[in-house]
Length: 304
Ligand code: GLN
Image (tube, rainbow, N blue to C red; front, side, top):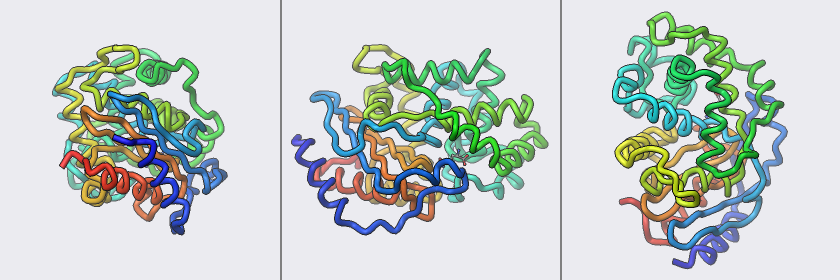
């Protein structure tokens, strides 16, 4: 497959499109990002690295971190984890409170905020110093010890986390949060403030394309069975109330973040990441979705 040629075509096509998206502003620090940043990186199991643009510039991974926290939790726990968070698409925005009330505090899936907060609670119960452990886990699967958080983004979200605090309070009233709300919220905001580049994220996401193995360091991080399950949740829930649209247009499992990143995989083939900060109304990178749609169209391959 001529991946570099295909990526060059995607870049040329993308740059002449008018982007109607808007950079996230509800976390004030994110609003400062240059909306014209655009990078893409593809890491192929058989033939290595391809990319273009701002592929080496780190950005706020935000909700993409929910995949890493779920993965870490699944290395520590078995099926009992899914008694506290379901695996169904929500059809609602990522930060919605509505379903939680009539579904007794059990979030629909681990990739909406409520579900990721339950996972954070599970990590707080299961391990000492979960912030450092989650950061170390991210460094391990990326093979890069310099991965870190952006303290300004962390501080900024801390001051604007009322909605996530209300999700935690509501779930605690149903008994589905075991720890102190401030502690759980702190871990969640910390993980969202991790910064990675497209190249680093594609490298980390190789475990999802390669049955749980890092490929570069040949570390089996988690079992193929668990990877199958995480990929299934990415496919059905990775884009909130746009998960159907992403599956329809792109046809790969993936996860987005309000920093404008999307990480996606083709099992057995490659991991790919795009970064373009302007978001569509569902909170997913507008140009990122376009670029990935073109990737599966130009290669002629998706998982379907
Ligand atoms: N930190 C963000 C929030 O909780 C993450 C949301 C996202 O990336 N969709 O609102």
